[in-house]
Image (cartoon, rainbow, N blue to C red; front, side, top):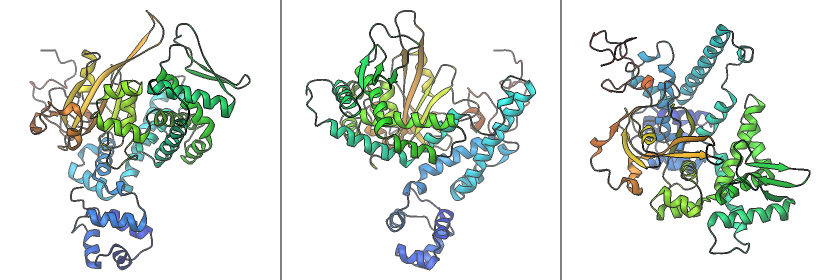
Length: 481
């Protein structure tokens, strides 16, 4: 934690608790004048004072972390860049707003979401499309609302992790072949538990996997759980874990979902599935065992996938959801994109900002992976705020059925701040002692203020468009060459 001037945060906390400066100073074992200086940003909020705040009031120290401030700044800059006149707000002023006034920042970001939704609604009405009558709410689509909910990070996931790990420990007491692969042992134990406690028989479909066949169907009348053909042991364990989550932690999941204040039943249903999927992932890759193995293997994703019998994407996604499991774990961020740049997964336990407007950065190695299928690409990437990250990217393929069946190809990427990079095997040959080698990237052209980028699709943020006849990158109908 660097020097953090977070006086407004501390003053807001004090006022919410109904405390005077003298009372708070006494609770933190500091002088009133020292506390006054912190609240007026004349002194930084030190780690010692933060730890005393956590001990005295049980607050989440993460809300004071620089990671949270950086994420807030990224969200705010995206919102400002997409609103009339917003690109004229200097970076320094945006930083002050995001760091000192988080509640006001959240209001601005929420206003931007409503602004975009209203614009989309007007566009649909103007085009007189069939969807226009349904665009009556200035809110996110259900899948967008759920994705934003999980991206924000919640203590709910920590509780589900604990419940999944407790179940994993219970399953270890059953007699299993110690030489069988991890995923196979877990799938067998889950199948036995479903039968013993819930009277549900697992039936695996025979033959070739069908493209349109659901992965899991629970037939309540016959008390059978049908699994699609062609699933690996890890995939079977994951599907069985989802079913057990809905059966044994359904009340907890429903409580989380109902408390989230979603606007539609569709969003609540999607969130319920999301919680069940997280439980299954935490059951297949339990906190302590997974983190111990990851540290021992220096986060070699391929070795972790082989050890636990799961895919590259599953390991990457799980790593990005474990920040709450251990304060010493690496805060990762994870994305999945297709060839067109659509981001279908976005998960972060740290501060990396993913653009919501105008696409992401073409210099990011997540896109280079498509030209080298199956190969792991590494990249040191420097953001406009001068923070540097290590990114690992690789393509993954989703296919069901035999020859000629349609396949889906994605690029998945896992990243972390460079200060953690030495713990990963992928950083060994990248020259961490020479940060100038980092590739300058941005969150997306619409929110990036780099002026000399050769891949820019829009003018630099807050810069007037050049009318130099030789500067033809943004001129309509400009000839190539």
